[in-house]
Amino acid sequence: MTPRWKVFVIAGLAMAVLAAAIYFPILRRRVRRAARLQQQSEVQARRELIQPVAVNPADPRVKTSLFWASDAGDSTLAPVTVELPLSRDPVPRSKQVLNTLLAGPVDAELRTLPPDAVLLGFYLLPDGTAIADFSEALATSIPSGIVSEQLAVDSITRTLEANVPQVQRLKILIHGQEAETLAGHLDLTGAFAVRSRQAQLPASQPLTAPSSEKPAVPTSDKPPASATGKLTPDKGPGKLSQPERKS
Image (cartoon, rainbow, N blue to C red; front, side, top):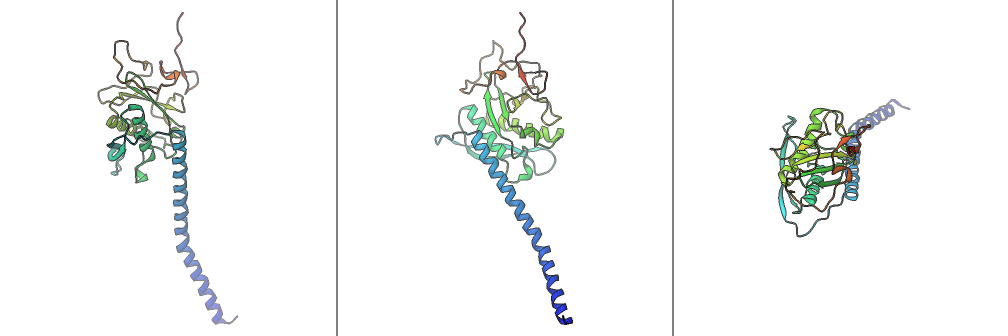
């Protein structure tokens, strides 16, 4: 091979390396974007399969406030107003706003809940205590830490407060079971205040309304049998059991 051909070969190889160095990062970003879109599609399909919420064409479109993380990056929440067709019934209305909250904002960096978390069920007791049952991903996929865990719960409670006035308190279950903490820090054994005037219930206080209190809202959805009595942890964490009756 003549020196001239060697120069051509070396120049060609150098150009190929340069082109690869430019193209490979672009290709990597495209692959990651495609994987992210596929994951979001799978999560959305799973959410629609597990938790179908019928949309009534007669439901009015309402300006709805959803609370996601603030873009200021100071670990606070900021309301985002969107128009949604919302039911007048508090139970399907709560499901509609929570499923929209789970779907996440346009900017994924402002998400407060894991993208693979799913609302499995929602129930409303006569005293205004709501029981939201989430998939295990809410506990396993959320970043562990008191700030991120508190932000997740606050985004749920403030969204309910802004859109469903019948909800007074919120009890969170993980896959139908009571959990001691969300991801190792935030206590889930009590009920969280939704109305600003309500104090958080201690874990030992029953969630049923006193006999003298008038039921706030009749609902067609009935909570699990384990959710209508006092919620007390069993020997193993994350189990619901009825209190023993004294003979």
